Image 1 (cartoon, rainbow, N blue to C red):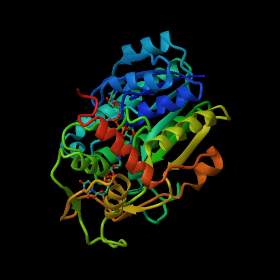
Image 2: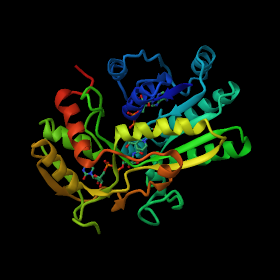
Image 3: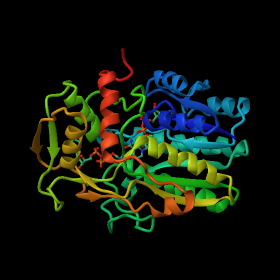
Image 4: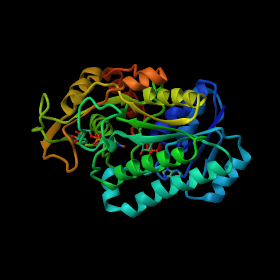
Length: 338
Ligand code: NAD
Ligand code: WQD
């Protein structure tokens, strides 16, 4: 079976290409490299020993998509391509709606014209807003998003669900990721944020490697065990393996399926700092800062459904997430840049 991976040069995409190739799938990658470096795919090739056919193309570019679907045998699409910076989406809502929503509509239209109706979509725990209950099951109602990025995910879930409802040949799997961190064991692939990181783990590793002075912890007065925010951090390789299981699921009968991909365990920001220091022996100086607007206190999953229906469970613990993120950062202080 051959799979088109949009956004395959990015953080989660590149790790997923490794797992797909290692599971024996043929993979084609499309990425416009707006938030990634093609070197990630060279690293994939070094790990798997297989070529990664790559198209530098935009999901908004219908002609480029037509060419790919005409030339390649695509049976399923894993759709990672999208802009994902929460704060930037508040400043540039048009760009986020255009890229993520118009881009996905174009992709889906080209897919159906070519009779490809298996789609795995990167959604996010952000669609739950401030969750109605914890741990969050897929039955938890979707909530109010606090930023345009989150709305693109929530709206795309609705759009893809409606498309599947209208045409039952579609197989749509919405994967709601919690907080992916960590990196490939080889230390050659990992997260490569542009500029100062927004997310916790890349900030921690950049403090540890000496690129940033100290971590600012956003809020220590939440109603959590130590006052700092609690999240469901998941190793990116576990997340990648969840996609391989989802691809297998598309071989069954078509339909709409929604799965949380998380560990089911919540760690606070201070837990992360402490676990990182214990796993790596490197100190992470921090200061407490005010709460970050839009943040919630606690967010972690109940991932039972993915276990029951996909046969998937996250295997890596917090220590490995910290060790692997650190190995990548230490070996590649400037990410994929020389
Ligand atoms: P990433 O930025 O590393 O990867 C996204 C890739 O998509 C990048 O390589 C980028 O160049 C590409 N891209 C963006 N717009 C494109 C376009 N118009 N055409 C072609 N390529 C385009 O991000 P990631 O962390 O790997 O996230 C992958 C997906 O998972 C995204 O859709 C993201 O919203 C979603 N997601 C991420 C997280 C997270 O915390 N990292 C959590 C939940 C969901
Ligand atoms: C985690 C915790 C922060 C940075 C975001 C998106 C979400 C999803 C995953 C895509 C929070 C705290 C962080 C720092 C800190 N992405 N923190 N200092 O906000 O849970 O989720 O990424 O879909 O949509 O919103 O992740 O890593 O930014 O924050 O104290 O410098 O770490 O306040 O409690 P978040 P995060």
